[in-house]
Structure formats: C-alpha cells, structure tokens
Image (cartoon, rainbow over all chains, first blue to last red; front, side):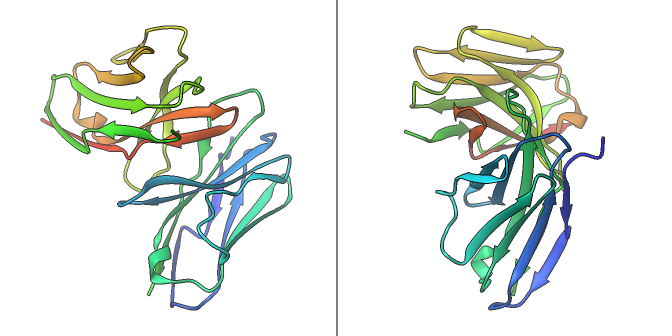
Length: 113
Length: 111
C-alpha cells in the first residue's frame, strides 16, 4: 500500500507567486481532506471532499486559496497569490466512507519569502 | 462549540514514567475521539480511539480514559519510552469524516 502521496515535499516561493500542492489519496478512499499545520494554530481543516465533491470549505482562509479534485486519485490545493503568512506544512489525508481513521500523507512544507 | 482544548502544550517525562495528556470538548454531538501521534517530518497517524459508550480503552501501553459527563478525555502512556517522544493530538468528530484537532502536545521522554 503506497499510502497518501503528496508533492512537492518542500516548496520555497516568493510572495505573490502561485503555489500548487498535489495529493494522491489511497486507492479506494472516497474522502479527501486538506489540513494546514502551524505552531500558532495547530492542525486546521481547510476543506474536504467526498466522491470528488467539496463538502465543507469553511476552513479555507480566504479567496486566495482554492482546491479541486478532478478525479478520485488526484487533488490540488492552490494559493494565488501566496503571502508569507501562508508558510506552513500542508497535509492531505484520506479515508474510506464508513471508516473513521484518516490516513495522512507526509505533508508539504511551504515557505513563502 | 467546535473547539477541542488540549493540555499541556509540552511534557517532559522520565523513561518508565506515565505520560498524561488531557482534552476537553463542548459539543455533546461529538461521537468519536481519536488520538494521533506525529513524529518530526511525518504526517499524524492514528494511535488509539474511543467512542462515548465506553469509559476506557487500552491498547498495549496506551489508554484512553473518557468522562462523558465532564466532556473530557485523556491519553495515558504507561512505561513511557524515548521512542514515544512525538507530538500527540487529540481530536473529536462532529460528523462522519470530519475531525477537529486539539492544539497538540509535544512529549519528550528522557532516558
């Protein structure tokens, strides 16, 4: 089992640039979650999908953030334009409907200069 | 009402000692309470979980104690080992699929 795959693992960019984070959930999982982790705010749920449809995006901080899930095996989280305060570790997680356990990817460490 | 409050923020325990981390919630609709363990550079991973119909669950050296009336639950790590040094997150589920996490506790077990 490959687990949840995220890319890139590290991203350094300059303020104002567009950033795209990618996630491949575990095969067969129909829920996908995007989280942001910072020292100040801990683990925050940004958005989650069920069967490729966004269910709850109330955690998305502002319009600069957008997420898509074009198919069951791929999702993106885009920040445009990026700001220094977006610097954080972004995690993707997935689970199968009927199960409670969420399986996390290794995360993408984003640094916005 | 959607918050989960976790304490302490950091904890230092001697090898062989007991580590205790506490969490409190307000929303009585929460029906699933997991604990996740995170090592540096890794994503969180499920450690142990409980539902409100039981007051305690034990898996090896890890025990969850759950107090429904007080709306509190805690993680106890018996015989703590240096390999247990990690960040621990409690969480609660308001509905299937969604988790609200506590702020995390950084545990350091000294040899």
